Length: 115
Image 1: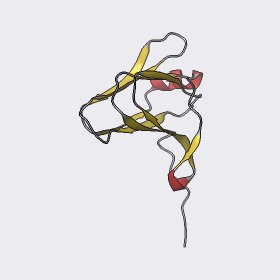
Image 2: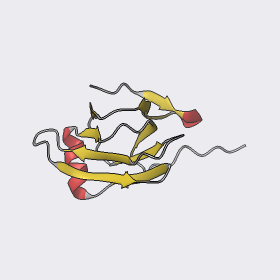
Image 3: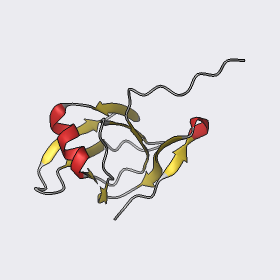
């Protein structure tokens, strides 16, 4: 299943915001400078668990597991970036209902505003 792009918030940051509530795997586009992922659940006690997979080999490159209600992680290691440059996969591992935000290039600041 492919994720479609949308603008996140009022900063016009290209990324993805979507709801996930079951084990699913999504195709990510090619990212050249890493990504930052924020997930949050609004009820229940399920774990927030997902993996970044290499699209060619299917192997787990990195991931995150958290019993907390929210979790943010930046993926900028050389190994992850190599997979992201080719187009990686993101796999959610459980049925916890969560909101997901994927933002490319976490080191890029929004434009300055001078009033």
